[in-house]
View 1: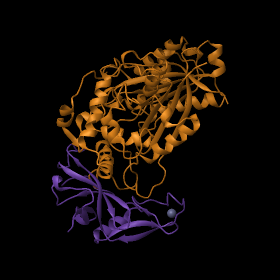
View 2 (view 1 turned 90 degrees about the horizontal axis):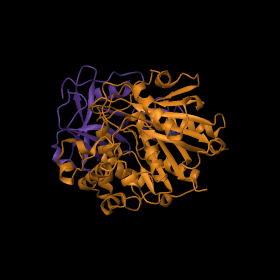
View 3 (view 1 turned 45 degrees about the vertical axis):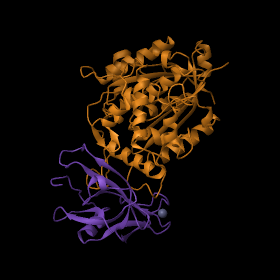
View 4 (view 1 turned 120 degrees about the vertical axis):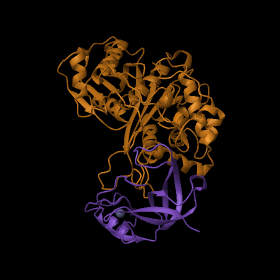
Amino acid sequence: MSGIPLPTPNPITRPHWEGCREGLLRVQRCSACGDFVFIPRVGCPRCLLETLEWVESVGRGTLYSYSVVHRPQRPEFEVPYVVAIVELDEGWHMLTNLVECEPEDVRVGMKVEVSYREMSDEITLPYFRPRP
Amino acid sequence: MTDAYVVGIDMIKFGRFPDRTVPDLGAEAALLALDDCGLKIQDMEALYCGNLGQAGGMVGQRILQEIGQTGIPVVNTANACATGATAFREGWMSIKAGVYDVVLAVGVEQMGKGLLGGAGGGTGIPKEGLLGSGTMPAVFAEAGQEHASKYGTTFEQFAKVSVKNHHHSTLNPKAMYQIETPLETVMNAEMIAYPNTKLMCSVNVDGSAAAVICSEKKARELGLMGRAVKVSASVLTSDPWQERDLVMPDVNSCTRLASAKAFEMAGIGASDVNLVELHDCFATAEILHYENLGLCADGEAGKMIDSGDSALGGRCPVNVSGGLLSKGHPLGATGIANIYEVSTHLRGEAGKRQVEGAKVGMTHVIGLGSACAIHVLEKVTA
Ligand SMILES: [Zn+2]
């Protein structure tokens, strides 16, 4: 996938994108209730407090659900591609693309790990790929 | 607190009307609803107008410019696919609160072709492609796949929803399409986002629907109780926090929350419901909502479509109008069009698709991002 639109980091999301660049999958976690929060935001939606702190995920998990997209919303995307919800080993969910895997080989429950793709000087995207 | 009744309600035949305008389409439905109860625009004390595409465009006021500038208050609502239902609910609240005795609610939309995008992020992490997909087909495909992996629901069962709803719409002259789509046709149609093929995605159409909502006292005064339909519950929810629903709009939790509140407000249970118009924006969504609305037990939705329980003539017919899949889905109009469908059955005026003996019906819409609106409607017996 080349020429796809890239995110613009802002003060709230910057730690996540800086982590990706360094090969670390950073996610917010609430110090009060322990819930993980992704996409990054200001406060914990459960506790309604500004108690979020950045932690590092192991970057491994299982495929929770997926779809194979055949008609993209924007022409920059090469089809078919696999959109995936990954359940990280810590129990939180992340939306991503599954790469390095043929669409017909995708199975819910398969083991996956983060696979970084450098898209620009600033942006590295956290995709996922199958792991043994 | 007074009870609120629908005394007049109608919709235009959904279709594609590129040569018309949004206010013009809305005005047509408004006049149809007023005609349905023999009232005039000068009888209305307020207008609640739902439209998404021109949300900044004062659509309600422009409708009045076509049918009568009486100076009444106008409230314009935008709430994704729950836009029309939200406008209706604003009207319902004004009656329940005793502020007005008779108001008009209009839902209208003019749509382009193509795929619907997700709600704006504002988080600096756009979803499309980067972290998955924000297109509606992918959201609902993934929600369907989640159900499939949990309960073994099959591609064929999802496809059967489309076959059923297209069949229903052959009996509805106001639906966009009146064509049968056999199972093989649905399953072999262009794949949009597995497991939803093109025929398993709702149809983008233009349309409008309108309702006149009235207090009990006023309805009796006007002699309109004969065809009145009681609004026994009106509920609106947003997504309750769930740690596991971090990344995709959650179509399940806000529906479950809304249905529980709706049953409590109406003082009934799911087994009392004789027909349902639910948000089948995608075939996968209808399967999920059988369980979310309590029409069957968790894990039984596949069985429900296989058994014919949700088909016309079945235990609890779902989307006898043809649903969003075949009647069409003009976003701002859908919520009120659903209420029109259920009201028509409760009045015994649904012709060939009449659900016999219908006394209680339910309507459901989901606006991603998210808003869920549920209405419970009851036949007036006294
Ligand atoms: Zn918390």
